[in-house]
Image 1 (cartoon, rainbow, N blue to C red):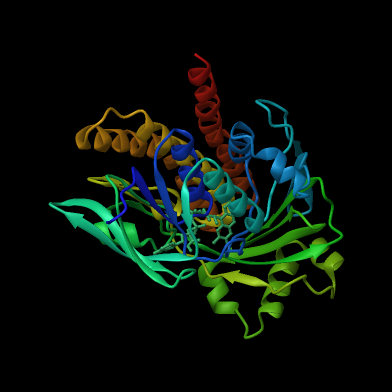
Image 2: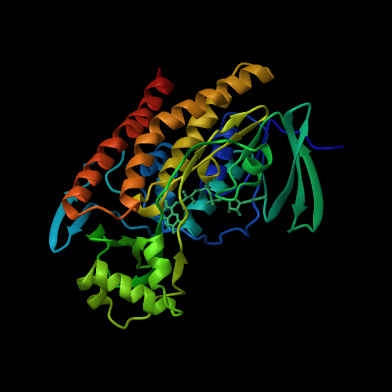
Length: 388
Ligand SMILES: Cc1cc2nc3c(=O)[nH]c(=O)nc-3n(C[C@H](O)[C@H](O)[C@H](O)COP(=O)(O)OP(=O)(O)OC[C@H]3O[C@@H](n4cnc5c(N)ncnc54)[C@H](O)[C@@H]3O)c2cc1C
């Protein structure tokens, strides 16, 4: 017999695992399929903003992040050229510090929480086909690489949480509502011996760099420029490209790292312009990068994924029975996501364009900080409605 679920989620990292956990906590029968092996890393730095930390706190997962050795970030240093401005993290809503867990920690924790809530988790398992019946998505097919078997399952809702190259989004032909023009390239590596209690973001015309303290006594040190300039100047050695970028963006930081070798390999992302895609349709929804991706320069994708997991789960759990009601509910999710995301998307576009001078950039970062307020307010309001 073909197994049937209330929801099938394709992709089990921050967006998919969080959505699965919330739907399963709400009593739904959920299947999650993730192609990567458990506990593996992915191409991403991992600074969380307030909304992301708030979600982990609200979901009772923050203590586990802390126990994994993820340090407390108490302030953010902005270096505009040689001028440094420090902004302290204001305690509030259960968040006294920011955190930047490695994806090996965060994604595994969320997937464990989904499993603990009753979701069935298959990993590594790749979905190869999304099935439809009478213009409605109704199931998936794929291979369970762990068990070496082919599988087939059905559900009234298939959720694509399968990242930037989403099979679900591409199969349903989710239209692009907005497409970005700018993109930045990022190179990063891990180093010991950096300060543990602050994010450090450094900017000079055309370049940026940052330090993100994380577990195992390490910090992620990244450097970035526009994709076009990166493609132009990239040499055959990634080490040399990294040192060039770091020295331009943050000469002090480059000097203090000197000839130290990173722990593990350097990783590079050449960049890709962002998008907002339609994320709700008959029998399907998209969450995380599958539906909404923006340039990593504003370090907000994970925070957004955790926010949108809850927006989607609440909409689905609150929907009356029936296909029509479910479709309306995921439509509401998409509208709320778009309302909260568009300002962040537009500001990110301007920052990733790298055509600013330092005064303009300072203004854009202030706007970015303002644009984060409505999402934090939305997440906090959830607790008031739940309590009521
Ligand atoms: C260089 C870089 C730096 C970044 N830095 C930050 C940062 O500092 N802070 C921040 O908040 N965000 C950052 N981001 C953004 C962040 O990485 C993404 O927004 C986030 O990973 C989105 O999560 P997701 O769960 O939607 O997708 P992903 O993390 O991409 O996960 C999707 C999962 O789906 C699985 N999958 C795909 N297809 C299938 C299939 N057919 N079957 C089964 N499984 C499938 C994949 O294996 C993958 O594990 C960065 C991104 C990049 C590229």
